[in-house]
Length: 313
Image (cartoon, rainbow, N blue to C red; front, side):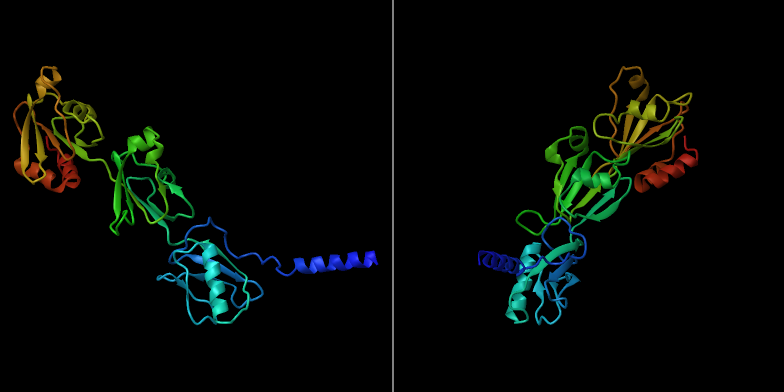
């Protein structure tokens, strides 16, 4: 009798354990749990109801539609378990299933693009399938170019307390050289990372290698530095050089520079800023025409190249 009772209890226990079988494997990749957004691809499994089990993309306005449901289900802004509850409630409310068992996973994220553009080796846009740091994003772009500027501009889709985008300026030295953890911001998706090119200055005239050169942060851009980058002077340079500079209001300046005294350490070196043109005439006093200098000021690098190839000295 005791044996029969034990066997009966065993069968009852097995039957009770089988009331809620494990749901079948959800199709698609099981990505990190994040809030669902527009255009994401979600995999929905309703146990014992294959007509509702499918992979469906969230619409641009944030809803999904399942067969036989008269109303769409709001998905945007919910975590997967929140969408599970919303689908179950909809199935019960329309009396399609008495006690639905629903699982939802995200197969693809398309609502979290992160763009990396500018002075990087490989500009790209990718989806944030989980928390991504600023350094992670730059690593995906294969790092900065040699002409990258001193700052990185990070634009988030919404600023705090409003709908206007928020742009932060992050110094490269602080992020990379200083390894400051506070600068390595965590990205959630929707951000644009822009790496502007560093400004350039130009060297023309009686030098061995006329050209344009990068202005990096700090006091490195000076007349002597420019002479070094342009491989020095040709024979018989003039004693006075000229810096042509366009101010913020559009006005042009011609700044004389005592070149001989600077090289003899009898006068302080003169700093250069982005878009400056350092012009060094020869000892005869021959100078480029004002029109030629204005072309460089107005048209930048393209005109600079034209002047170099034309042999302006």
